[in-house]
Length: 245
Image (cartoon, rainbow, N blue to C red; front, side, top):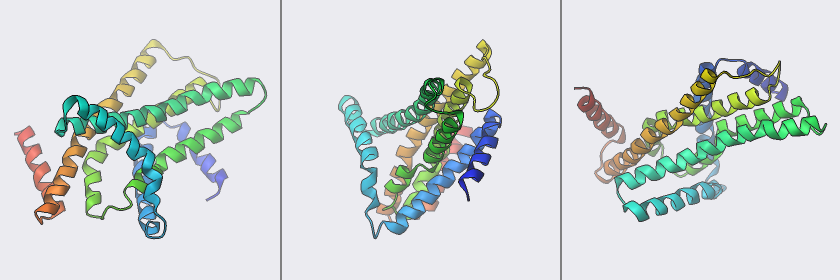
């Protein structure tokens, strides 16, 4: 797969509607996690790849310590720690894309860069965050059964993650289009953008509560010699039944 082919595909991606960008990014993010997890597990016996994820682990530990110092160590403090950690990661991703057009707008006006350079950097950062190598690296030592704990909360976590990427891309090409003329957003468009952004903390808040529960389920099943798959099914089946009936 050549770089020119990727550039062509990315250019087509940028011309998609918001919802189609979100769907593509959501599935690519899951694919990226699967690929990095598989590669990390294959090379971990040879090279200790988990040490590369020390920054992510340290960030969570700092947040968790700060939250638990105020709330104590309980279900909700772990929930809020996951939420804050993931939300900060998504905001960081969004801000990276927000900053790029300002940097390149200045450099292009001074003749130091071109739209082509700007496009290539957008593609690079998009590919990097979609592959999400740090998350895959952190899961290198987990057994395949333990990886089931990623799936339930992952539906919402990756929705928030994908939303931050797509909104960042949307803002970038609004501020500095790669093709065509710059459009002017109406007040209604700005409000819609803000409402979409508010979905990020909502998705991540739900994911934070579920992530805490998911690891409780895994640990409970392992300590009691139960099937992890069956335990997950029974817990979430009973939760859904209690919510719906």
